[in-house]
Length: 246
Image (cartoon, rainbow, N blue to C red):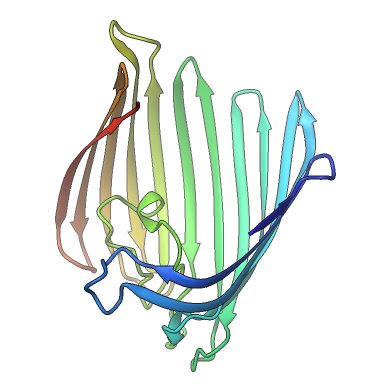
């Protein structure tokens, strides 16, 4: 990986991947994926002073993987604006087959969101769309942390064949220190999932997180509840995470 920041406000990033280590563990045949992939990203601060800040970025992700059907080329751009307590994001990308992928397809990705933060509280509304329904392959994100974006219940780690529309609303609050607690950071998100093509209503999901830190110990509790309609089955998950700093 090579990163260059020699030009003020501009960050250039290029990376080559020759192997992907997956989440499945060494004893699973899916543990490692051979790769001949390139990632390129350029980000520029157009404005960096109040009352308006603006960042633009463009990227090209050329994934040639031994799992041939997820070999893709994706080209896109993102615009992020911030004015006082208001932040907005607009993003678009186009994806098609690449490398050893035997399929022939092209699909779009689109995202828009707006957030308002005031006195420790944040309210965000957003929408993401991953194209699908061409009968071949949906817009895929094989290297992404999908858990972070489309629900903690992990129903959409792979994009459904008919694509995905994710309408979401998020409310969060972060406190000042409370006694021995450095802070309490909590948020809840509601997702409504639909097919990008066709009348399918996949289902809905509620996610919640509470995080804090006591001395050198970080504590995070996470909850997710997916209610199925036309895809998968009901799913509820809880997790507790402890982080120790030395």
